[in-house]
Image: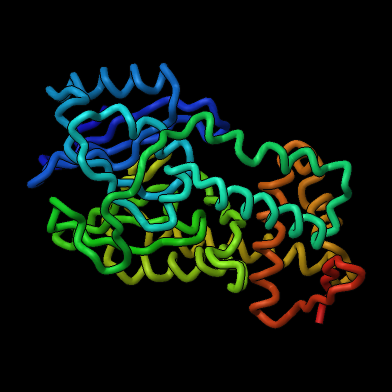
Length: 320
């Protein structure tokens, strides 16, 4: 636990995931709010209660939950705060909290179809049966106050809402102009580059999101805000974003260039590329590695250096 200033404290919560510990933030203002809510395990709950106690609070003192995005390591304990009348988040968080069956059926069908179009062999289809597994670590509830770009954070009028889609289609961050403080969720991390994750469009009639392009756009947006200090969802607090973010974007461009070189050699499916880019990881983490591969392809396509064609229901990418 760290008291960062007179209105914000960082509480560190264990997770069972490879990313390691996650941070939640106690935010004081007109309302006592918790930004994000860890993961749904006994260890996480015990750690959160202990750190609240060190700050002189109990779970019953929390009046509002604010969520940066819908991933389970950020929404797990939302049910544990009896006085929290509001859950404040982007509208795209809600289906994950309500466990909307129609949404999850649509979600699974989207990935089944998309994996087929990526050329993923049927023997790997078991990964599609695990799409709901993270819900075991997620809390249930309902978004009661929807916020988005440009809004003021309820109960905290000095914090502005910044849309930061890319890592998730529900991702928001919060910026305090008076001192350049930025609660970044998983959008800005110092030690790792967030994976822009594939998600289906919110409506069947819409094109799928291009999360890598969103992520880069929102990194540039962050560079223009005047951020001085980042309070992240994982890892250390940091303040060197003007130097860090261009380096992170350059690393992504180099990864994309490696994909381009593979396409110069021959036309390939996303799955064929994925196997070459992630030879040790793709079988165990196919959903994550396909997301990363498609992200680089979206970037290259946006740059006008690769194209794609649909043949027998499968996308083939080629260098222009």
